[in-house]
Length: 70
Length: 248
Picture (cartoon, rainbow over the protein chains, first blue to last red):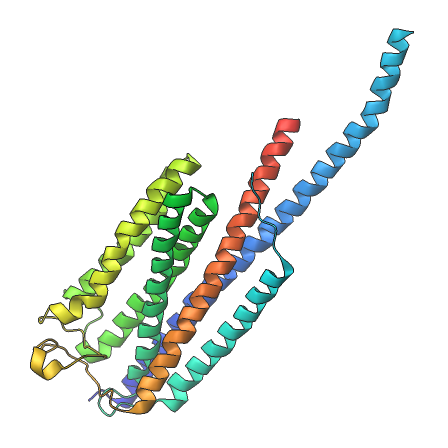
């Protein structure tokens, strides 16, 4: 027969490990998702900026072409 | 690149599954700690059983998902299946770790040792190492198609270790590991050497074990789903980075 104090201590230790690993895994997933979302947002903004810059450049190039034709 | 677009119904389903998993896990903890009776010989440490077995059931389910996804990848060659296979191992491995560590903690007061040479324990540590090697294998192959192909075959073959770990206590009479769900120990002779056995005749034990296994499996499926979504997000980030680099 295992003494009750010993039994209780190991039970608490076992459950603590379960909670620690489960929450660790959830926290890892949550943190990774958060960082990826932030990266995605930043990259989408960069893409929008570069598209806006390209569309602004476009008429200038057309004017230049017109001048060359003239 | 074929990037996933999530339907609101699918997101709502995942939310529902998350709530279900949280509720079931809460019920499992409550039942294991307060509903299931205290073992007369082992005391409260026997309550580790519900987490130890539940986590293994969930890990085995996750590894089985890797097998199915691996087969589907080899048939369809769709990268989405590779992402599902990876999710199976990334969720299954921590769950197998829970099984190993809780087993060692339970063994200390019942077997008077944290770890010993035993067919079940050896099989379990080999299983853990095999799936840890799966992640290492993936990290060493740079070509996505080649990586997916190798990982699919490896994931299918690795499942042999799960089957062996599950049945080893039924085929090796020299194991110390008790058979919680045994057909007829007295007539088969299997489990004669087992130490730390406890009575499973109490209905509360079987009900708690059933609820625990279902809860852990639901939690594993939920975690795998989130893991697949993270991988999809990662693919989107990589695709966008490549597009921006190409535009520069």
